[in-house]
Length: 124
Image (tube, rainbow, N blue to C red; front, side, top):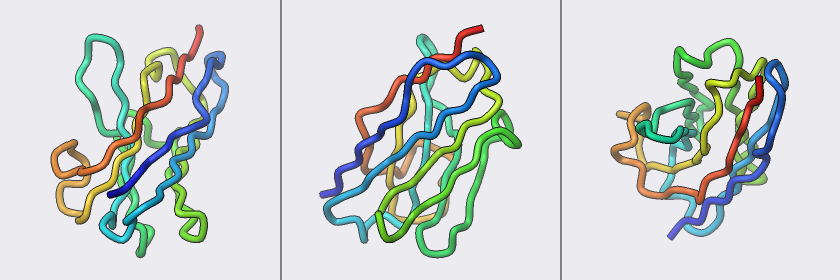
């Protein structure tokens, strides 16, 4: 079993920055990829970014490319999502998730473990 705990969400003005953290514990060796997803009210959960633990390979959604960066600290078993130049449309609950393989890392399918989510609200 793997436990994922997100933190770092909050209220920020447009143009501001936030850094989300996702700390993993438990049988983390089963997760080779960690991803960030978000879900706004009334919308489907969408892919934001993902990273491979060992290689550091990343994938970023076009909607946040150039503004968001994903990184990891293997020693702390923590994944980060640095969010800059935030826009009101970035408002959502952000979830981190883990999966055992890199294929399909931009879709929700295949992610076996999910955190509880952290709210990000960007005011205009």
